[in-house]
Image 1 (spheres, helix red, strand yellow):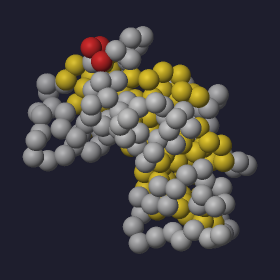
Image 2 (cartoon, one colour; image 1 turned 135 degrees about the horizontal axis):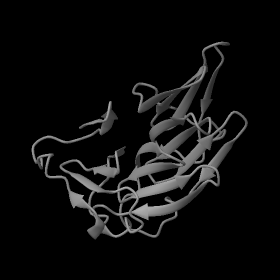
Image 3 (cartoon, helix red, strand yellow; image 1 turned 30 degrees about the vertical axis):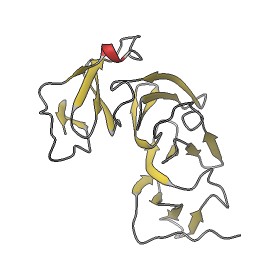
Length: 199
């Protein structure tokens, strides 16, 4: 069997040391810049699922994370591909799409269409789950600044105290009034640069 990969539009791109990973909707192109060797990974020859939604290179664990629209996650290392299906298997009726990965300290935080998941890459397991919007809005991005954690939706931003052990409770999050609620455009990205937060 062969799976045709539509390569007309890239979903995401990451660089891991000397290797470039380019995600298409249903496949992952891997290019080694030193040897110029190429490989196309699909569900047929290594990936755990079909529809890729985002990529992330984690320099701490030296791995590439592949997020899928159904909540599945693959962890690609130099020697293996390991599946982390916890979000995909969650018993919720809403979309579980993986939107973004962000490392903070020992954990990688996963922004999904219903929550923020706290991922331990050492044990390949979800340690905690946060619900800034009570599962009613997709979390498009997550970021950290000083002692706060920020969750971005398409029209507003939520903030919580990063060390709060009760972040799973939606009442522990508040709407950040500094960012206007936008019903015309759509917010997409959240970044901290030189201790300033950019949306």
